[in-house]
Length: 280
Ligand code: TMP
Image (cartoon, rainbow, N blue to C red; front, top):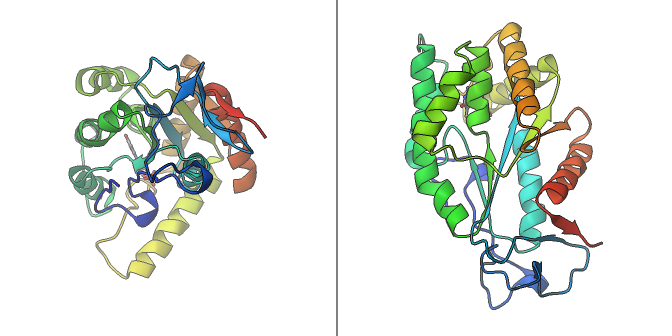
């Protein structure tokens, strides 16, 4: 069981233990350790999703969730994690900025409204500092062990928010990604498409409610939510541009319906793209 400190409960990095009929000898099941026959797991498949990875592959999968603040990413990420973990797949749920003790400290600095006058380039550098640590400490080791990593935001967020929103452009983001992140690419990115106004309103309400609950001036993750409508319009356009550039990796999912409708779309996409065979 691996955990990340300083993370909200719902986003703790988890390694899910297989339960019920798929739990064999209390083992964690990872993609690398699943016994296979012709690419398929050697077990019955009632009402389940089987993650099929070529037998020569020891690496897991890296799936990222992207979208505007308040689009419902975290909820959908948890729902997908539940589907996969119910099948005994070893899932790591994590987030950016953050995901490591160091990254969570950087997150506080980045999202706190008390952090004023942060230069866009400094913001960019901090995003990549947290990410570089995250890859080294969490993402690469987990993928290397054959786990499925579900990450709430990754470099596409930097391209959308700093590249688009802050107008730094894509080139510098992609260059830093190559230099600092070894150009690590997700196997699949779910881009949740939502309305700017509705999403940002939702994010603001959620953060205000959270701050009220915690009754603490130190819990304040509103710095980005305070940005203008024009800022989020640029973020959205940058997201759509990168999705058009990389249609194989980035799948746009309509997130304007109910959480259940969105969940169903995401499970379909994940099943199709990563060869999760629904055998119901
Ligand atoms: P979230 O965890 O609620 O999605 O909030 C993280 C905020 O940080 C969100 O407003 C997007 C922003 N962000 C960037 O601006 N650049 C990045 O690279 C990442 C990962 C997040």
